[in-house]
Image 1 (cartoon, helix red, strand yellow):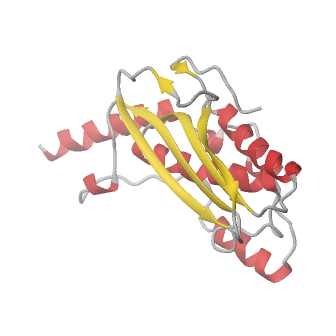
Image 2 (cartoon, rainbow, N blue to C red):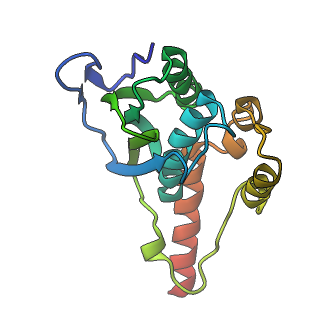
Image 3 (cartoon, rainbow, N blue to C red):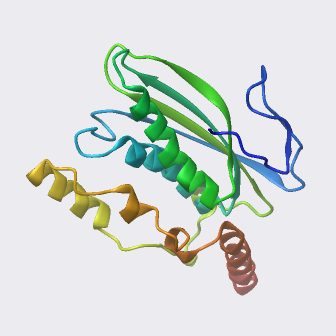
Length: 201
């Protein structure tokens, strides 16, 4: 279900380990853990929604670095009474976003949890000219994507209604996340960085 043919893959998922060809650019690694009851609630979101979100938060971190995503490793812990369809739905949602960015899920783990769902995702990308908050200086330009405040508004609505009102169709449409590509992010940010540096001199 999750196997894809990434051009950098040497030994694919399913073996004792995953091997990929080194990138010509710098390697970027990000990781996020999500826990049921803290970062998501299953009575609010479908398994597809949860899978999509758990990968999206990592892609957001890569985008902020100006990095292009390539691979992801996913570890999932769920209660023993979890239905197979819920687990498959989780990966379907994640793969819907991964396929959009031509990523490959290359490993991870699946085990039982004594309580909540626990999801740990790490992503590997490449970036020629890495950006970062630690490099920010007075006078730099700051850019945001999407509509500010929608996340907080959505949480407020969910808390008031306690219903599943947000679906995967609303979050992973065909318009390429916020109409940006990672290549364009990296290129545009590097050009801005050079312009700012030149201006300071």
